[in-house]
Every structure is written in structure tokens, then in C-alpha cells.
Length: 195
Image 1 (tube, rainbow, N blue to C red):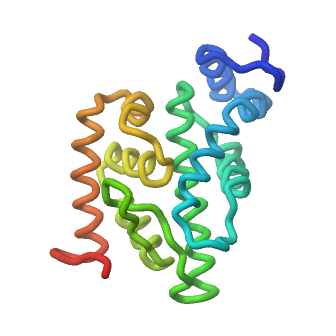
Image 2 (cartoon, helix red, strand yellow):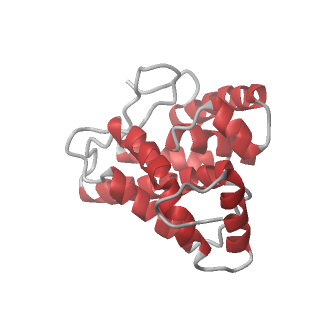
Image 3 (tube, rainbow, N blue to C red):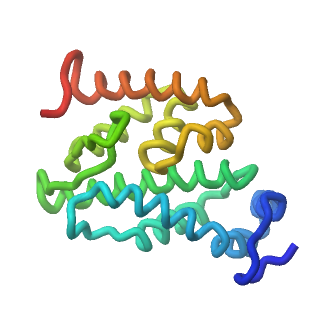
């Protein structure tokens, strides 16, 4: 295994390095990071592309803040897909923290997030709604919460989520439908929804 910046780590190399992270090797995550950076940046770009123009958080900053959370969290990722799912959760935390700060600075600060719908239509959420979404996520079944984090905050496809969580794509679809309905009810009440 080589882990200089000029070569790509294989799936097995990443898995071995993640094992080293789990066993206390504090440098292993630093060796993985350059090889997954572009994937993480793509996830961040997908998230922030749906934001209002002039958003104060940029993809690079989102990736770096998520990495800081990962580095300080006792990372327990089993493989690359699992690592990306955990990174999606870290990005969720960063975005929620950012929404809280923006909401505190400027109520209704036009902060927009990605969609809870399928397709290209985007649901715009203000800081209060992002915080309500975060609270509602905590009431979900753990796997459904992970599916939402991977899809909503991580921009992952069903196949990627299924691999990361070790379930079938059908299970991911079912969890997504249930979680989405639950979150709408929790955030907006029965029959409610954003204007």
C-alpha cells in the first residue's frame, strides 16, 4: 500500500487505514483524507449548490469543518462507504450549526437547504426549519436517520447508502419514504408543509 498523494488508495487500503484509525493511529485519517477529499468536496458542492448565492459557507470550508469533527470524534468507519456516510453526518452537524449561527444573527436569514422531495424541485429551509429538521431527525429510528443524513446532507445515491449501511437498496427506499413522511409531520404538522 502506498499512501502518498500521487497514487490512489484501493478500497482495501482505505479499509486498512480506517482500521488503524479505530485502533488509535492518529495519523491514519490524515493519510486517507487527501484520497477522499474530492469525493467529500463533491458532496459539499452538491449541498451548497442548492443554497442562495453568496452563501457564507463554501464547499472547502464545509469539508474542512466536517473533517475537524471527524478527526475529533473517535471515527469508527468500517470502509470507504461507511466513512462517507459518517462524513455526511458531520456535514449535517456543520450545516445545522451554521443555520443556528445565521438564525441567531438574522432571523429568517434566507438560508436554503436541499430538498426532502424527490426530483429537482428544491425545498428552501430557513434557519429555524433546519434546526427543526435536526430535532426531528433525532426522533427517527437510527437507520432512517442515517438514510436521511446520507441522502439529504451527503447527497448520496441509494446504492451508495445501501453499501454504507449494509442494507438493500429497497430498504433504503422504504426508509427514505417513511423518514420523509415522518419529518414532514414533525416539522409542519398533519397536512402541513412549507408555503
